[in-house]
Amino acid sequence: MAKKRIQEGLTFDDVLLKPQYSQVDSRRQVSLKTKISPHITLNLPIISANMDTVTESAMAIAMARAGGLGIIHRFLPIEKEVEEVQKVKRAENFVVEEPFVVEPNFTLRKVKELSKKHDVQTFVVVNKERKVLGILTKRDYLFEKDETKLVKELMTPRSRLIVADRGTSLEKAQEIFKKNKVEKLPLVDKNDRLLGLITAKDILNHLNSLAVRDKKGRLMVGAAVGIKDDYLERAQELVKAEVDLLVVDVAHGHLDACLKAVQTLKKRFPHIDLMAGNVATKEGALDLKRAGADSIKVGVGGGSVCLTRIKTGAGVPQLSAVFETKKGAGETPIISDGGIRNSGDIVKALAAGASAVMVGMLLAGTDESPGEVINWNDKRVKIYRGMASFGAKMEREAKIKRSSGENFSMTDFVSEGADQVFIPYRGRVEEILSQLAGGIRSGFSYCGAKDLKELWQKAEFIKITGAGLRESGLHDVFLAN
Ligand code: XMP
Image (cartoon, rainbow, N blue to C red; front, side, top):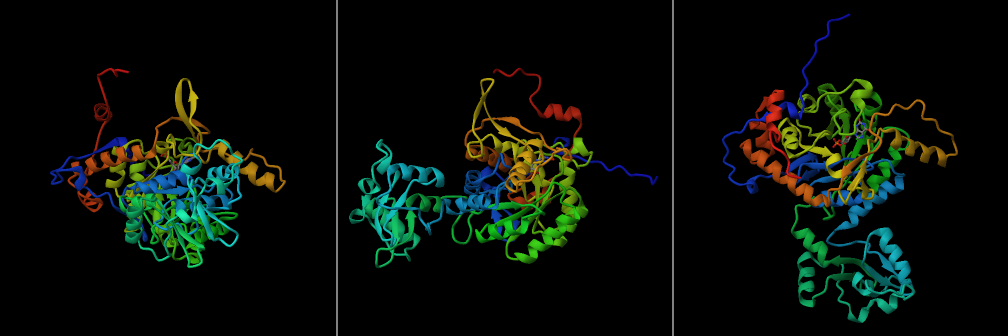
């Protein structure tokens, strides 16, 4: 047998960043801007994982608003995944191109159903010719108990509405809101037919935020596809819905079939940014880049609910995976995916060469992740699970095979993820992201870096021992609660 050389692999806890001379006096001087693909620059280097307990539209909206990005998972029928992308695209745009409408004879019950289904509270009231008859906002029906009441009895009628034409600029809309003390501005043609809607809230969000937006001012969003079955059709529909980033998502991305899928997708949709993974080696990154990936997702087996390393023996400790893949990726951005537990880990991943991190566990316990908050042993928790877990796989197979009438068997399936774990309920994701951003900024400042480029140049790692690691955490004290 040929002599095998054993490489050393390090991860976050094996190292610290050396504090350095710094001219960064305040965390506010640090820019967290990062380019993750040709057309996407984030203001916060955090991406929420494409997992069914982490990212659907609510998470993606919150992530993009905070300056990061959400990737809608692919374990949904195509039309549902597209719908999630559309919800993000509609969430806030200075002009809502196709506002939700109701007819004057709809009952309040029907309006409430529509409100729940589409997650909106304002409806423009139109007739069959889309002529504007009024507007119905939450204030009009919030305290109304009689659900048989009709829209026309509750709405603010056209005679009391301020409207504007389609070409209304951002500045003009602000003026109208200020002068008339209104918050919604329907856009109409000369025959009063509805052409759009501007809301004061969207303008404020638009003006004051770190939000990551497309050219039309809508929030950006990514969506995952696989490499088999319906992946091309799925990608096609997502592109039609104007998704900003396609993410080829497979556990072992250095697979011939994955490289071929990346090539095909890049050829079919040359103008859409394409992220692909996961890989953990220089060769894997190089091959994905040559196949056409615009950014590369890095990480095999390091996620909090991953069992890949246990079940297969394969993987690379995450920090070494970032160092190695960076060598193959060169200028192509890499995203460190999995194993992030705190802002310190994020700074280390970035300092090693990543352009952003992808996180699951840290965000799974928030209001914005799919699933309910449940009580477990007097604690409030949410469920998190690996996408390669038995349960997740079984649910997918059951949906596909049942719809085609086939029987399915799981005997060949080897689970590489934890089925269901509980994550403490953590409230709004915005707060978690703001805490993480603060920690990252401080981390940059300790390294003397005012932005990512400087961090890459200046950061120096020190390998530590078990004793060093113990010293890094709380020690020799009792927690008061
Ligand atoms: P964290 O540590 O943030 O990791 O929870 C999220 C990442 O974990 C990966 N992932 C899996 N890996 N088996 C695996 O080996 C699984 O079932 C599984 N599900 C998710 C994925 O890369 C995700 O972004």
